[in-house]
Structure formats: structure tokens, C-alpha cells
Image 1 (cartoon, rainbow, N blue to C red):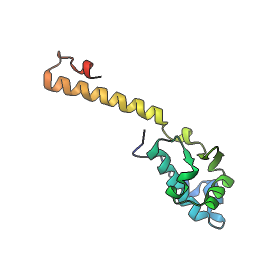
Image 2 (cartoon, one colour):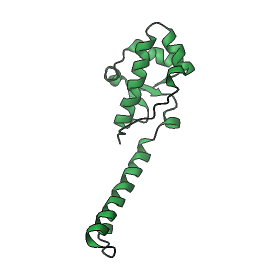
Image 3 (cartoon, rainbow, N blue to C red):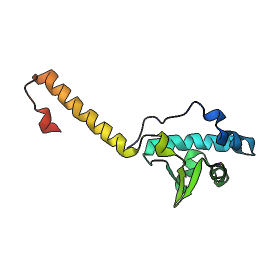
Image 4 (cartoon, rainbow, N blue to C red):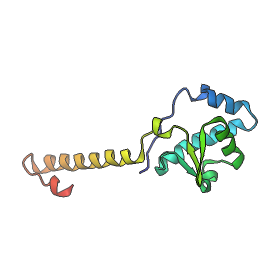
Length: 127
């Protein structure tokens, strides 16, 4: 499930890992890649996994990926990279699916009650 947003901590610009990253050559570019990787993972519901094939989609190069691994923002994973701490800070894709299903059911019930009255219950057949 894709997320229409990701949590972006306001302390990101002065986080020690970011400060280490931007202090080095090419670090500002890699910082932008990190931000794009957050958006990519949220949009595609990857729970923080960035496949190697997606590196250009997050505006990255192998050198940027290595810089992110070196400072601990990404971790090397089979077939790509994992954003460090993704599930600690972002909503898991499975949780998003559950929330969406719950909202759909509530919407069906609300529409039934509004259009058919409180005793209809046809929304149960639609769930």
C-alpha cells in the first residue's frame, strides 16, 4: 500500500548522521537522495527497502548509496538497501492496509445509514 505522506522529522537537518553526511564531499547530494528514498519507500509501500534498480528513481548513484550506508542512514540488504529505522518512524505498509480497510467499511456503513436509515444494515453485505 502506498502512503500519501511519510514522517519527516523536523530535526533532520541537525541530526548527527546528516551532519556527518553533508560534511563530506558529495554529502549534500546524498542527503537529497535520502529524502527521495523516504518518499519512494512510502509511495511504493516497501517498508523502507530501496531496490538497486530504483536508485536512479531516487536521484541516486552508487556513490550516494555508499555514503548513506557509511553514515548509517541506509543498511545494505539483498538486492538493495534498507532505510535504517524505517519501521520505528514510519507506518508499516500492512498497517496502512488495515487502516484503509477500516475506513472503507466505516464509509459504507455511514452511507447506508444516511441513505437508507439506521435499521437497514445493507452495508454488512457490502463489507
